[in-house]
Image 1 (tube, rainbow, N blue to C red):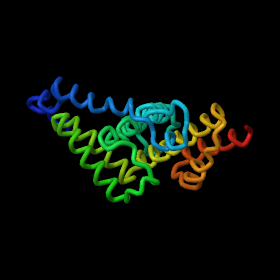
Image 2 (cartoon, rainbow, N blue to C red):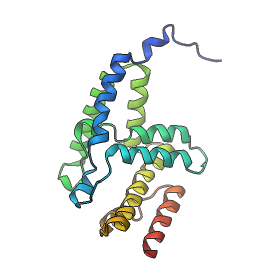
Image 3 (cartoon, rainbow, N blue to C red):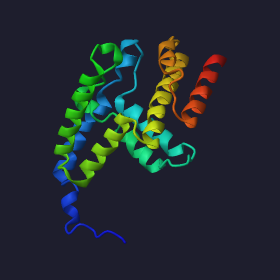
Image 4 (cartoon, rainbow, N blue to C red):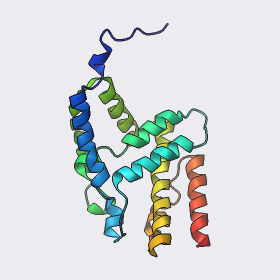
Length: 196
């Protein structure tokens, strides 16, 4: 039996004001450069939004896999680093314990969802983010892999364009892929790196 629509569907959607406030916070994703590249003196490093955008494209073109909803993966890729609009791009070498990083990001996500006005849209954003963080679904596993694949593809591009040695990024992901797509795409990137 189909569920009935809410009596006031507009009550679950963010107001125009809330949406613009939320998107204004998200602007920082476009202007904040990824910390790992900045610390390695990469010229014109990608922003957090650049990284999230290509992950969304990756999810869109990923091969179908049993039990994986690619549309959900696209959405998850778009929100997976959204809390970084407030906390910034915290890297493992920042010395911040994983639990503290998670606490800060959860607090930022809660704040952003409150700005969004609560409701079903804010809940969807929060649920997607939490599912990704917990690595608790086939979609989260694929998007976690795409996060690493995007990073090593970007590393390869910076190596080729700028003559950098970014081997540490390849080493940090080696053997950590959970899905067939992640393993295949990472192997292709590594193979192309060896040819250069």
